[in-house]
Length: 417
Image (tube, rainbow, N blue to C red; front, top):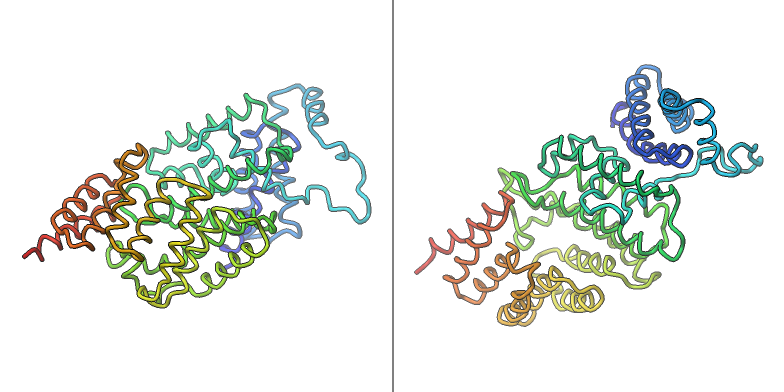
């Protein structure tokens, strides 16, 4: 890894920590973020020439604080600014620390910042955008590109999220214990959505968006580092690592989609698989069972099969049944139907899919049509399968998925008797 790359990685790691310190001290989320961006730009220009400072984090905090102070001074009278800073500062801010205490500003506010970006007052779309901007360090243009919206639209979304935080006077602090678990579930769900959008983009010409999967894994690692004993945090990290391990084998020439059963498993990342299996195994032993742990366990069973034919489908079916009892949702049922078909035959899977037809969340979803078509093909009903693949292709907005589904339908047409 080159020196510039190391510096870039360090800046991305430190950015949310520095932003957390400033928001905790001064409030004004939007002004703090601007100041941090200016400090990051200064570091990107100076560090390659002058070398890394002894304390990069402290350097960024100092520079950003100066920029923020200049900004506040231009907006408020000096005495009001000082009163505001004093009122927001922790009680021990102006006291000399004990000899064995952490240096000022040394604590990591990344988790608090994540809780702030995922506040229930924000819409899910705003939570994702603000998390990627403030904690992930992605530019507005990068986020807009990832979600295929104009940069101006994404900028407005992020701006509205900041205004909402300001207008509701959300404090920069971890939520009280009674609501912390619920808020943590929101944080994990946002990270899960970011990863899923990166792993299988909902629209556009590319199947995968590596910048999003990479950010989701990086941020989840950060949360895991802060909450190493939380089973669901560990489970989500394991799920991401195990799923991402298959990424090199998911596409062929020209970005064509390759389904799991047809992938060259020698291309899977063995190091990531070993890490993911260790993570989920430890979580299942130590922590109360949760949905992310179960999903990670299913991914681990797939990962441990050297060939598709060696997959332990009965174990996967048992895990899906448990997951559906613990956290029922239509997508779990859809995957449960696939596992059921692999164990008990396509008819059993098709019967389970019928329960989703009245669910408004899934009735028009392309994946329901695609899975039904696959099971119909397995059952030998080629005409119905062909129609199902075409309907799924019509409904998806992902070009790689569309091409794959149309190819399945065309293959059935060519091989028709």
